[in-house]
Length: 221
Image 1 (cartoon, rainbow, N blue to C red):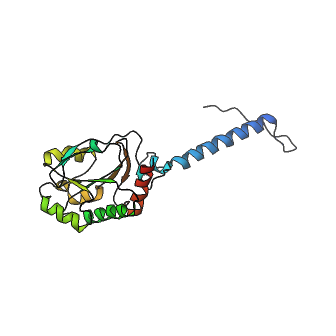
Image 2 (image 1 turned 90 degrees about the vertical axis):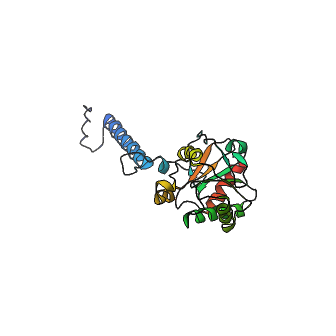
Image 3 (image 1 turned 180 degrees about the vertical axis):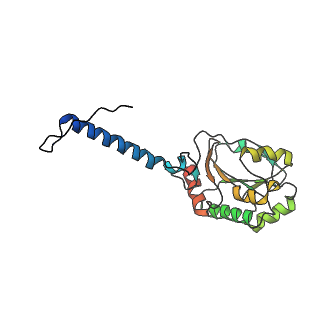
């Protein structure tokens, strides 16, 4: 690409008007390029990091607006059929756990309980089993009492065939595919009143304070 030549300086050291314009244009373009690089950042793999370039009112990771939460209908700990659609118009906490997961699932459940204790208004909590074979009604009941969530959440289970599409829809790796992989990816979602995925927490991001804060924001909206 051929650039126009910049006129030489006068002997008195002052740039001629065309030279001043060219200099200012170059400086402006350089400033824009640097600003874009700083704003976008890089994830180390040659792709732009969207999360680093955006700000959010939530402490969890805000998901793109319009992401519809995949629906499901499963059986709770009392044998009743529960569908996600029935909670449209409410904020929903959606988690994926199993009673035999110690200490990981116990910790997640206790973080959720801590958030419930802080909230001024109640919120719907749905826990979907990722190990339906071992999540018997007795074990689920014992687990919920252990973590202080008895009577405060719906613990949903079913056959592996019914649960597998739900796991895939929410990007959950069940422990049958590797316990370590499950514990690294066990997500907690906040679903807003429109039935859209709004906030996501992954390993190490969930605290009672952050969850309560974000639930409160969604309840106010």
